Figure (cartoon, rainbow, N blue to C red):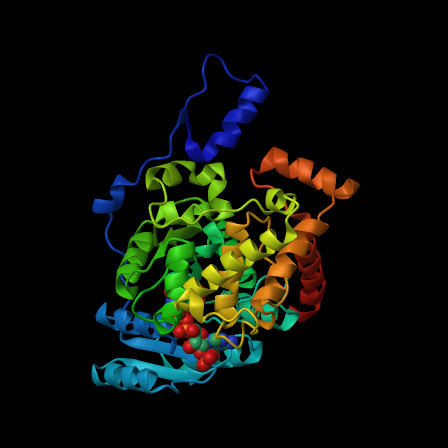
Length: 450
Ligand SMILES: NC(=O)c1ccc[n+]([C@@H]2O[C@H](COP(=O)([O-])OP(=O)(O)OC[C@H]3O[C@@H](n4cnc5c(N)ncnc54)[C@H](OP(=O)(O)O)[C@@H]3O)[C@@H](O)[C@H]2O)c1
């Protein structure tokens, strides 16, 4: 009998015919230990460090730690406790008897982090744990994202985590928590760099576990009351609609973190946990959700009951021999989607104005591009800077993209592969610039990430 965690050994034995009779693999136990295991406690006599500790989620985590008895806190951000809210929370914590070191420290600056840790070791009790919550968001469709945008997002998470990992190896930590995002599981259009950055954190957590070090990467879903989504309601609504992410209060999420810390598991993979709430019926629009991993959840989620819009087979339409009719229909759909994104009546959309001028910002442009991909069943969202186009310009762009897709040999091979492994039709004209951009970013990033 083999436990599920040793399934590879079981198959090896079978491969080598080293067994007599049957090999039994015991399924991984469903954690009914949830009710019984003692809760992880945050040591009140030692020091707890939160990077991004003046941001929404980090600051709430600091208050929550204090509510759990923590009496020695180090909070860091590049600007320090600069916002009125951060100042108020730090003052409140101090009033409650918590010793708070509120520091302006850039977690990507190795020397600054080393100096901060030395100072903490010299002036405060030993370090018990770290929460790495620092982040910068700079969303853009992968075909448009610049190397700087990629680096802006990657470096605070990746380089920051590397410094914290390396520079605390000599400290006997109780926990090392990396704040990731559920987008590493389900994807999110416009967040390639963010997903990559969080993917690194999750890999680091597993690597630390393999080395016997504490580590937990939490792939949070949306947080409702603090942080970036609480500040950008439009983004939160778009995520709920397009990705099916339902927001939960920060404290509810942090309480779930305690469960994860209390039952850390035994495998390196246990170092990564998604904590979030998803509407699986809405989330199934995401390409990642068509993988077998999510099959059961997506089935349970049922059908999309919201006003699902009609999709249009643009290729078939384009072959109809009525270019003017095609153009009109494409324009109608684009106007409808812009009106939805901007939450204005359709008749308010001027087809001759640049979309940036009618109020479409970069996040809305991502939402529009994704909606158009869905409506026109494109393999990828329209590439290029959508906000600089007019409605008619964007319609031409979409139509030309579909017309121009005449597969060459390489494309046919790629399409054949895709047909074997995926279900959607590939719009190679849209995909090619994306692939080229990814390759280019990869080359540029090698230089930027030291
Ligand atoms: N909010 C959510 O819904 C949500 C969902 C999933 C995951 N998360 C994760 O939770 C964490 C916090 O998110 P949030 O919503 O609280 O974001 P936030 O409010 O934007 O806070 C992020 C903080 O990170 C700090 N920071 C950025 N670069 C830094 C650097 N180089 N060194 C030190 N600090 C730096 C920023 O302060 P300065 O600009 O002063 O440096 C900022 O206060 C992130 O890791 C995010 O991925 C959040």
